[in-house]
Structure formats: C-alpha cells, structure tokens
Length: 230
Image 1 (cartoon, rainbow, N blue to C red):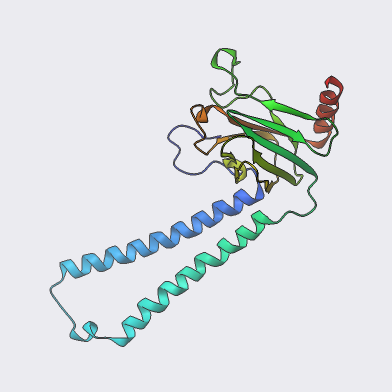
Image 2: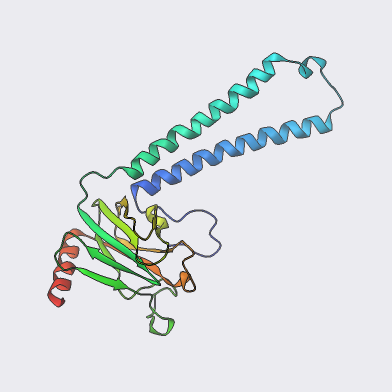
C-alpha cells in the first residue's frame, strides 16, 4: 500500500514485482554513474584552461565512446528481456479469473467454477468502516489463494480500461472485443489495491481494484460460501 511522501515503488508482493524492483535499482545505478561521469567531464572542461591537442583528433577516444554505450545498453537490455519473458510465461495456472471492465466498475468471473462471479463497485465514502481506504475500497473483493499461479483474462464491455495492481507488478489493458491475459502470484497474504489506469471517462478514478490473498483452505471455504449463496 502506498503512503504519503513515498518516493519509490510499493513493497513487492509477487516474485515478478521483486524482479522489477531489482531491475529498477540496476538501471538507476547505471544512470547515476553515467550522470556522474558526464557532470565530471562538463565541470572539467569549464574549470580548466589546459587543452591537449591530441584529444581533439583521437581515434581511441572515439572507439571508447562508441563501444562503451553499446556495452551499457546490453547490460540494461539483457535483464529487461529476462523479466519480459518471466512476465509473459504462464505455466499451468491454478486458477483462471475473467475481469471485465465496465463504466465504471469491474466484474469478475471464476471460470474454473460453474457459477462464481460478481460485480465490484467502489464503496462510497459514507459506507466506509474504520480502517478502510477512501476511493480504494470495493464492496466485493477479488479473493485469491496465496502462492498459487493466477491467470487473469482481461477485457472490456464498453471503452478502454486498464487492470493494474502496482504491488503485484500487474498492468493489463482491457480492450473491447479483445481478450488479454496476465499472470501473477501473491507471495504472501494481504490486501492489494489498484485502480483503472486508463482514462476511461468521467468516473475513471472511481473504479478501484482490491485483491485479498488468503491461504488455500480459506479460499476454498470462501468459494463454497459464495456458491451456496448463489
């Protein structure tokens, strides 16, 4: 969960998000080193009056400033491609959920069950209970089991939406007439909040996403109760 004055990312709640955080730190350190080198060169050129005529026409220095950026790009590209493949890899998901975006709420369907689905609307401010977050709480939470690969099929009924959970490293566009898929795995129990991150209309900022990750036995009890009520 994000908090005021936060400068970095939210704490990772999935293995993919942990990899994304590591890659962010890796790329940020490279950018920091490049910026330091460029600043040093600028200060040196401005502050010194000495010049070396051999530097003005040097084949060696041209080789260095051509090869060095290529090496840096490779150091950034290789871990980036690895994470892209990890994010796209879906091997034998334990649970498949269909998330459909509407103006302005989400509807969910557990496709592995015969009749398990519901709509998820934002909880209005006057209905919030102590401890709940304004503009982030929903009347029905998306319950998933912990440490289980989850596949989410994302689409939209009317306009473009985007199903995004920052702490899980998930962000997938919901496009009308198109079925996109995204996979994640919650590494620990907890409540994970997200919002539609596509400007989808007047109430764009009022269609939050709440995922409740629970142990498998609690998920089975919850699904049984919901099916009995249905």
